[in-house]
Amino acid sequence: MKILRTTYLIKAGPFGNSPEWEARHAQICKAITDVEWPTGSGGFTLHPTIKGNGVVPIKKSCMADLKKLGWSLETRFSPTRKMKPGPVDATCIEHEKLLCLEWETGNISSSHRALNKMALGMLAGEVIGGVLIVPSRAMAKFLTDRVGNYREIEPYHPLLQSLRIDEGVLAVIEIEHDAISDEAPLIPKGKDGNAPR
Image 1 (cartoon, rainbow, N blue to C red):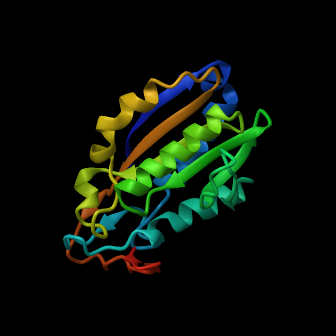
Image 2: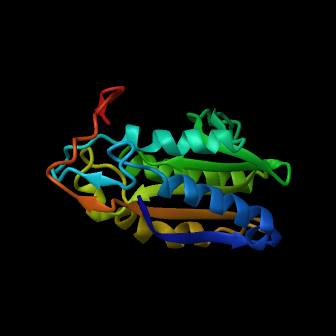
């Protein structure tokens, strides 16, 4: 799988330019680019069926790679007393705070919730950084219907960029397939509640 870009919505204080962040960013990028489909193929090739491929299986190897590097999976935290959000896909500890990572498998509302949850955690002083991984628009059209994608959330970036954060990183990583082929198997869809994934 390839990475098209990392966009920083927040990069404030020493942490954003620290060796610790650079090392964590490198771990994340390596775990993304190592994602393969079909498994063992050495690349990421999508079957070109519109809305035909599932999403959840794509992130599994990335999460497994991060776990081997000491990240925790499915971590819960509450950025405010009034919120009891779902778990974050992966977290690690930096500067005695959480560094969070979410791989988008839901719709655009889910993308906004993920970014807002991590930003609120930064405002509350619990989170030092957050990363959201989203497909490009070109990739999203071959995935399950209405999955969140970079182009849809990009117009809202200025809202998060306007936050006054003294220390931390909030970033969006845009990913895309390496190739398209009719010979590639469809990525299976699972069930998360009532939504196909």
